[in-house]
Length: 353
Image (cartoon, rainbow, N blue to C red; front, side, top):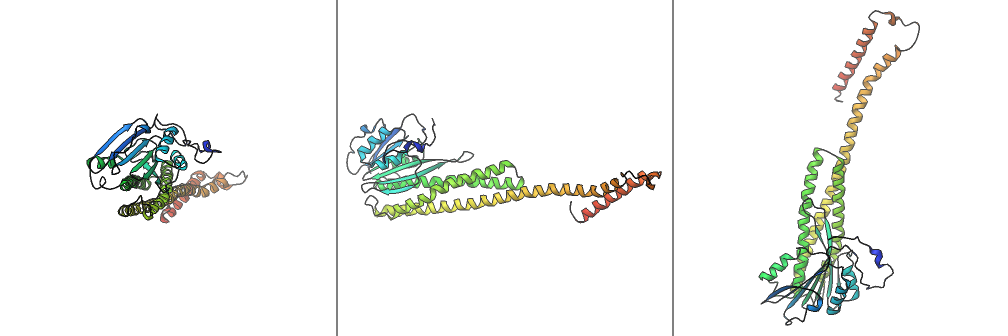
């Protein structure tokens, strides 16, 4: 279920930290998934409320809680009380129009990202994903249930790589890395669309082509608005001196930073390509108009001398000797035909058509 529009006016006049959901509602009620793991075990289950969390079995166990659906403010407040989250953090989680950022609250880090979907012919859409990194726990909040974190869950359940052997900071790295990798899928889809559009533009120009160009430019603007703040946030994580991020994990955030730079470069390239395609479209439309005007001008030029001759003999003078000639009519027609053929021959020599 998807309903509602972004209504930021609902927060007007309220105190900072007021818990008001601003965004679309995709589900009837939030879904809470609890994952606990360590090097030796992995457990995943769905719980009805934060009260069912209980205490972790030991300090070596990492707790990962995923909340899909943000409309329940009481649930968010309860989670905030359990994990001692600042009211401003809860407010930002519920406001789904946040720009990507990273904030250090000492005992935990708060990260905001945007995940994009829309491959093939589907329209590009985005959702806000909030992540809280604490000591031995990670909280992730999504607007709706999706498969964006499924690869990370599979790595945890199958014990692939080093993810279960290291701390919660590496889990956050895996989540952020998965979101950034998804950008490349979106870019591949956009690249295919641009190539098809380019081929279509060479063959013909229609108003639908202009609409497609403008639509893709809006999608790239949407991507760009999220990527530049994301670059700043990842750079802050990479250089962070927080004790929650180990030195070994910071190197992996540097790799994510490089990926974000590559995505930004691709987006800028696509923007330039679309701008050039728009110029080509406008030039093609202008050339078509020029061709039409050229044909009309040639037709008008052909009829100008013929109209002149017809106008002369259309004057109502009493004495016009040619009017009395027996073959005068056919002679004038012949002269007019000769003039027309002469002009057509001249136009062809000039390659005007």
